[in-house]
Image (cartoon, rainbow, N blue to C red; front, side, top):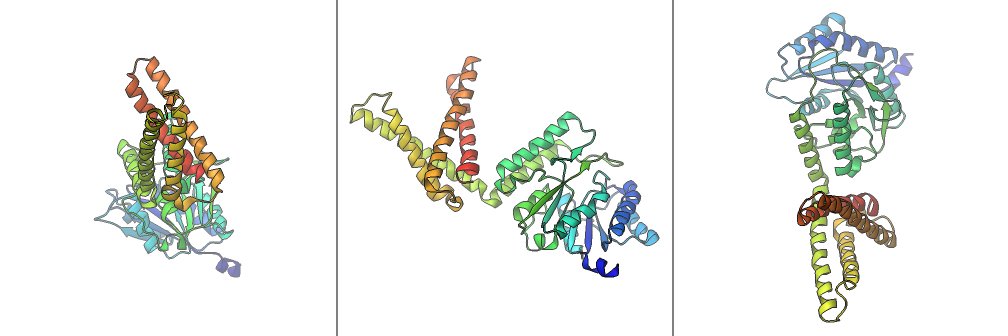
Length: 364
């Protein structure tokens, strides 16, 4: 038995806290029981932001009186969930890190399953609400909508995580090596998303869990929280280079307008072609212009598919964008929106659709 236990990785459970005193008894007892029964050596790393209810003090007391392997870090001059988790990474001694909340919405009984998935070859294991078997309990419809919307924004803006179903989960495990050399941002909002973008890993696994009811304390969801999330996505887009890519795509698109207009003028003025029919080759030449510059510049690092398939897909993106533009333009004009404003809205939607199509399909 001792031989088997020594072969298992040591697990550090990192728990950022603020006013979570009332949850600690049950939390520590369930963590200890789950990991002891599974045969894991473990430590509980509590990073507390100087809670008014003295969570940090009670965590230390439980370690002394109940024998739990608790390491407590009390932060007086720092605050924030992400920076607390990063501090926990630095203080932890385990081979595997598990991050979870103290509010008992993350069931400690799931920890052994997360760690076993690491032992079986995963680098990051996410306790996911959005894979088959997972879910949330007693959420209002608007909170579900906000959660799904946040995930959609992250997956669209950051293609690296587009196959992860729950990239904003606060309950996950990872190998120490994933974050050892990562430049994690302590002012980031969703630390898992930060790790998925900046960490060193190959394999991500998601295991289902049901997000439970909060036992004590207050929910962290607020308008400020949502704004911070959007800021975080923006920072990660910038760090990942996706923001630069979007700017390049815009520049190329602008050049395509000049190509279209220039050739239309040339065909009509010097070749005497019909103003209607002359626009067809002018559009095609602008598409070829845009494809060439995007292939050589915007998406140069993503060229994997054969040239002909990229070109064909780029044309499909152009047609899809045109269809979206008309689908928005026509109804807006019908309900009385000025046709030029309606067209601008349609162009903006078309631009987003074309960028996403090309980023994820043509050069995906």
